Length: 555
Image 1 (cartoon, rainbow, N blue to C red):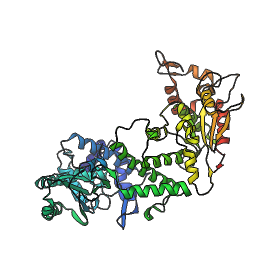
Image 2: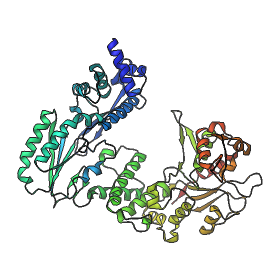
Image 3: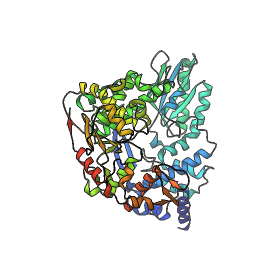
Image 4: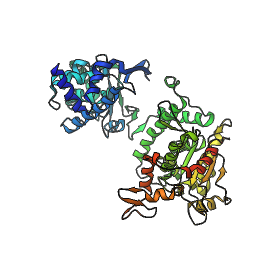
């Protein structure tokens, strides 16, 4: 028992977890009791069995830490990793496909039952013999126990990708040697092997190559999937891991066509028609998948045209225009939740902090779920490079607000995305509001005053919210204590902010030099320590927001 105890201690130290937690997982809870199993349809037919550690189990945490440690060792060794592109840092299906671009012939080969081929004995043997880890046999056994399920690597565990790359590396090197013999470029993405060449003689040699490849795989305990072997010449569409590689890298025409059809159905009917295998997904999940498809296609447009600048919104190709419409649709035209757009990047942190402190008062804005975690009922717009590129919504600044208005109205030569989408819609639906929040600064020449002037809108002195157009609203901070202008920081008790010190420094809204800290540090501190602040000054603003988010606009 002493040997096993020492081995557990050693592995716990290697992983960076508590030895009691490790022991409990291994011997008390039982490893198999910490997994969930489900099936997902394969595109080629049939189903793929997924076995993953349950979200609440300690096993998932341990596997994530173990995966990180294995990666660290993996990257510090002299292991040749040029071949593998799956589950590798800074690599992807695009880097994998790029190796085979503009080749005369492309051969794709699939390894049958890839993950199942890594059985318990193989995993334990590798870790007990590999000089980069120096595990004892007992330690290697524990590692194998932690990463295997029902005697093999499970497809769905955080540790499975790195373990497959570690164990398959020696096979990769044998295949590299074979590929050189036939003047082939070789890469692998998980169980997908790709070979390419400009040699005119390769078709005459392909049968010999495949037979030699089979022998390497079989000797190493792997099987060759005959059904998924495919060779394409340059005159046909050549694909590697779903990427077209003829002259330029691109998503397949079928993938692009299907994505456009899905988006069109969303715009017209507010529905997403996914393939049969995904029909049970929620609308939220379908939206995420459709967004991912657009992002995937967009990668190639950026890759193939690096000359495009920040003014690209005015010169998009047809694919990009549809992505633009999708982004406007999901964020503004028909969002799944009310959307709040703040003037500055720190404003939303103050609002979130106030809502978390007073969540019981504003159930339309925030709730606590069954896991006792906060769940916002509104969406705070996250300014991303993608929104900047397609909707001209910069990562910071009030000018963004005007750009949003322009895309609702077609002002300043911006595309009238609202009009385009409304024309496509088949029937009127109730839509969530979008609220633009400004500091109340109408007296001086500040963003709110400028915005109202350019939109040709007026606000009465005591008015704090107006409907700009359709589901687009403007909300500003209610004035208190006789102030003529107010920023969001003015909603705190003055004495509370004045006596606040962070790192021995006091708050200043105008400077960050010397013995003071600025707005960003204040916002971060408040957000992380919201329980210690008084947010009563936020109540008028939150009351107004509470009213606005319940408005549904039909169009």
